[in-house]
Picture 1: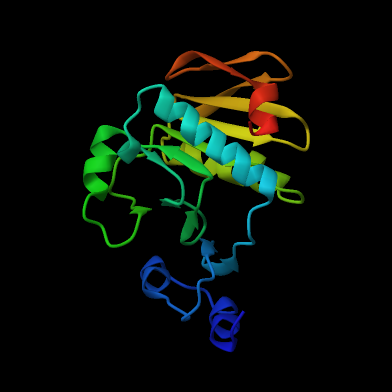
Picture 2 (picture 1 turned 180 degrees about the vertical axis):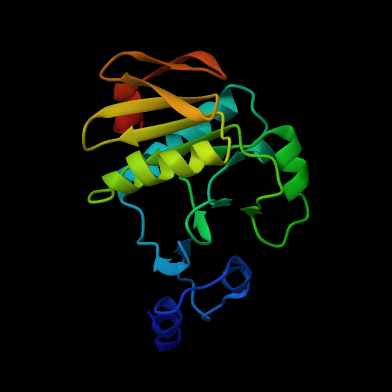
Length: 194
């Protein structure tokens, strides 16, 4: 991290400051309760799982402009917070709202994505199971998947009356998506990333 990033990271930032922030590097950051946090590179298994799901949803007929890797979303926290899910399925309205944007960021005034997928990284379980769960529920995201290669399970959360109801899938169980129905995809296939 550069000296400028270290100095900025020690100060709380507003969303506007974060969106304008550029330290002159390719470092990717999330803003969590006003703090600038460096996003570590993805593990190979996390990258493979996200790629598999990207290809799977394209094969289901979802247009390429609605399946996204690398799109950021502004969520609620005690202070400004943004997240970079591993994969998003955008609604048609959200895809239109992002057209022509100079930054692929889902802003608070935009509709929420239909589906967000997070692949759990080591030592980040609380972030995906606890913090992001409440942030995505508050944002009204209809479906949230937590793909956990560590615990060997996929948790599918459906947004019902402001909270998530969960179903856990393991081994050869086909995933049932509240939005997309029974999928020709098992937990084992997802966790292998192939």
